Image (cartoon, one colour):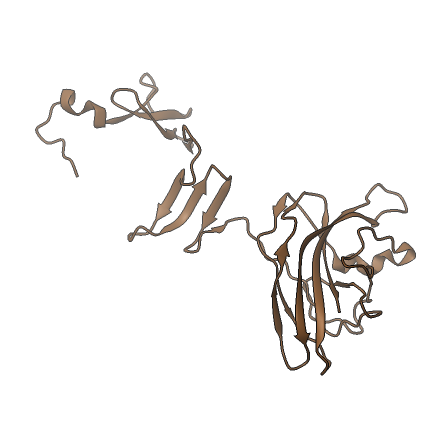
Length: 242
């Protein structure tokens, strides 16, 4: 590292840092930190706040590293991400789980809603079907039984991006079975009428298939992302079909 020992200000002013407000210095208002010849840095400082504003957005606008230079906190202003930890996972990442035990389809080839966040099913949750097409139905009006699928829906609180969808699946039969899984998003009516809870505008977020599924195995499905963006106000549902 350099040293200022025995050097005059005229020799070192370019390497000295100061705030842009040369009248008040550091005050309650933030002021850019700049070098001795007035070149601004990306950092502004005040007695109450610290701000980082790059002249150009980058993937490493602000980072905190370990002593061995491994990044454990990084602000990426190019992609509007804040990544944390050794694996640099987005700080807003959340895990959403759908699970069921002894979910019995109402018929072969029928998509069935899967509850979220539970492993119990038989005798506790009603089994609700959602179409027999290649994909689940894009609309759902359960009429007087709309309350039956309230536990199957996740309300999206803010704009989300689906990074990955993984499935563990098995059956209670000895016969090899083909199982299909879909993660769906819907608009849900919420206008204060008797249509409240009806689902429309269904979109496949991700889907996948497992073959040769029987009671002797647990199959893993890495679903294919079909539509990664989910906007605030929608609901997410998972459906399974054999």
